[in-house]
Amino acid sequence: MESPGLSDAPVEAPAEKPAKRKWWQKKDPAAITETPLDPIEGAAAAIDATEATPAAAAVATTAATPLSKPFVQIGTFSIEANANSAAQKVRRNGMSAVVRELKTANNTVWRVLVGPAATRAERKAIQKDVKDLGFKDAFTVTD
Image (cartoon, rainbow, N blue to C red; front, top):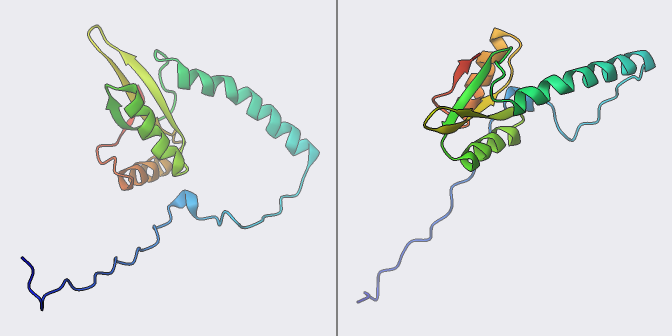
């Protein structure tokens, strides 16, 4: 039963604050930067890139390969799709993430690793950033 003099007050949605920019998002994506081209440096960079690719692919796909540098583990998942979803969330925020399968005698789980970190400062920055994304239990691993 409705009273003739009562009505709901108009409600306005709260204003959204812009998201705080992380250390990897400091550069304006719309900014155009000029990079001088040097054929020698370009060739050296191409050689370095081709040498690094097989090692990076091995880390991403081989479950038994130990990690050579520290990574930040954001979670261990019993469902592979959940691990891939977590890795995608990290990638959408500009960080590198890999999903590694870990088999035991009774179980298979998928670990989501972010990194690798080249320095202690970089590792701490990655850890802080993934915790800001909601992965509060993140910790450093090297295997």
